[in-house]
Structure formats: C-alpha cells, structure tokens
Image (cartoon, rainbow, N blue to C red; front, side):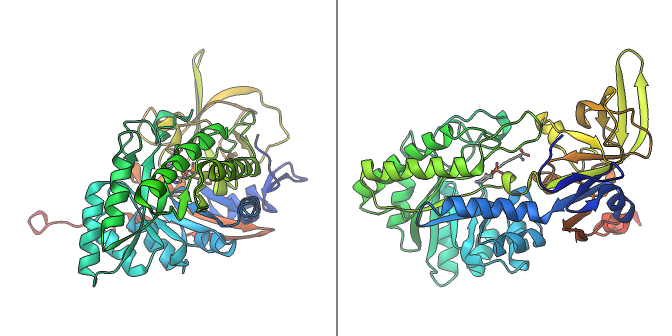
Length: 437
Ligand code: LLP
C-alpha cells in the first residue's frame, strides 16, 4: 500500500486522505470519484523548485497532459511553476484559469494552424517546433498576424534509450516526435529558424520517456543536448538560451517501486550540466524541467464501490467496481500496475488474490490483476492509489459511462474541482438529421 503524508488510517479503521475519511467522501460525493490532496501537490512543487535553485536560471514546468483542469493550473502557478500544453484544449484551460502565458510552452507533433494562431494571440512563451510542416505553418501564422515574431524551441530526438514501457518511450530513432540529432535534421531546422525573419530561436528541448527511475538516461540526454548546443553556438554563432530536458521522473505505483527522489534527479542533472557547460565552453542556458506525473500522480486516489463478485472456481475471482477503463485506461494500454485497499476495512488482513475488473463490455477492462485483499463484499469502498496523473486526463465516455468527478481535499476540506457529468451532458451534442426525424 502506498502511504505518503496525505494518508492516515483513522480510529474507525478507514483510510483518510487530506484529513477526510474516504468512506465519508464516497457517501458525500458518490463513486467512482477522483480525489486529489492539495498539500501533496504543493509539497512536490516546493521540493522541485527548491532543488532547481541550485542552478541560477531554472524553471519547473508542469506537463499538464498529466492533469489539465483549471484548479491545478491555479495551484502550480501559485507555486511558481510554468506549464507545458499540447493542444488547443489544454491551452484554453490554462488561459481560462488565468495562467501566466509567459510561462507556457506549447508542444505537440501536429499542431494545427488554428491552434498556433490561438497560441500566438494568447502570447505563449514559445512554440516547441516538432517538424518541417509546423515551421511552414508558423511562418504563415506570423505573416497573417502582422509579422509577429514567434519564439521557438526545437524538439530534438537525442536518441537516448530509457527503460520504460515501449509506448511511453519517446526517443527511439523511429519516434514520431521531433528532429533527429543523429542525421543532422535537428541542426538544419535550427538554422532555418535562425534564418527566418518571422521566428526567433530560443533553444532546444528533448523528452526521452516517462516513468523513468534512474537519472542516467537524463544525464546521457543532457550530454547529447549540450553537445548540440555547442554545435549551434560554434557553427551558427547563436547561443542556446533555453535548454528544456523534458519530464519523465517515475513515481510509486507499487510499494516496491523505488524511484530516485526529485532532489536527486534535479541535483544530478544540474551538476552534470554545470560540468558540461565548462568542458564544452558554451554560454549557460536557462534550464527547464518538465515533470507531469510526479507532480500530481501520488497525490491522487480513485474511490470505487464494489459491485458484483464472481468466482470461477479454480480459475479466477473477479471483484467488479463501478469504474473501469473509462476512468483509468492505463492497465488496458500499458498493463500498468496499481495498488489498492478496502478503504472501509483497512485493518483487516488480505486473505485472497482477486482481479479488480471494470464495468465496460471489454474483457481487457481490468484495473488490477492479482490484488491481495480481505474478502471483498458488495458495497465496500475500494481505493486505488497513485491515480492523480494520466487517469482523468485519459478518461473517456466509453460505453456511455460518465467520467467521474474530481474532488480536491485540503486539511479536512473537500470541494469539487471537476463537477459530475450527467446523462444530459452525454447527449447534449448529439443531433438527429432532418431525414431521420
Ligand atoms: N514533456 C513532454 C514533451 C512530454 O511528452 C511528457 C509526457 C512530459 C513532459 C511529462 O512526462 P512525465 O513527467 O509525466 O512522465 N499516458 C502515459 C504517459 C505519456 C507521457 C507523454 N509525455 C501514461 O499514462 O503513462
């Protein structure tokens, strides 16, 4: 079971998060329910920001694909973080939350003309250019907007292998993201940006993958990126003003997971960079880290009610919950592992190994294989840990299930930050053509 400071077992033997009994949360707000502890998010932000101060000009940017809702942008802004957005929708949400646009980095491997116009009009800090088509689009956007000078970084694929799930590796040579260093295309695009009257070259970015437990691949990426910065400086006579090393720091999903602390990641990267700047003799860039999962992941749990229980003698026992792949598709996509507990019976010892199944019409709709639990009963409240990142943000209405609401808790207070969907919401954009009426 994952225990951080946000969790406690109270006198009733119930799990508490942020000072509130999960059984009470389930009663008041219903299930399935995403619950996020505000203090946990703030603590992680503070630790990141403090560790990054070892480098004079640094910025921690929250990769908001992990969780893009207005209240989160408010929290991270108040902790002095920037943010990365990857779509018009994330950008719109950040803007609606009043996020400081000068701290927004716009990513994505297929940004549309309209998204780029929106970003330029809102005044985002910079666009992280992923491909040649985008460069053409950006020149057009600039021309169509009174030749506005658009600040750009270049998404580089440094070709560093990180040991994580294949689907969340982003730096293999055949990755869909960015420009390869190895074949010279990254340098070509930097030159094209420097030569363009409409664009301003700010720097380079890479992101090598996600849920990485070790700092070695980050330092290897840093080495490639500073080598590239030296190449740009020496050959194109232009300094790299910003170096963004991406995100990817791993979190604990299972008790045995043991990622490096944020401080260790950040300090390791900063020390390595300082040495590389000296040996490669290049001006010091602003250093940007872009964690997503590690900012919100462990701060979140999902509460479910146990429904049907089915034992197939000698084979398997299913405990079905009122959620599933529509609120957490990560097992279905990546065979991701999670740990869980019966929030209303935490003092009871596990006596059986069961499969926690969702309610979608899909055999692969599993949340946890091999969960060790006390004998679960219909009506129990199941808490699944570390669901703060890439759960709500990847949720869907599959089978026309409602995406669960989300509650923020803070020292005994609880309030919706995402209100419940209704069936009316589900059909609100459906339409029936004249000829079917
Ligand atoms: N920066 C860039 C450019 C990224 O593409 C990502 C994640 C991040 C930062 C943040 O990475 P993090 O610190 O969260 O690992 N849906 C997958 C994860 C996909 C991550 C995509 N990019 C999952 O549920 O595991």
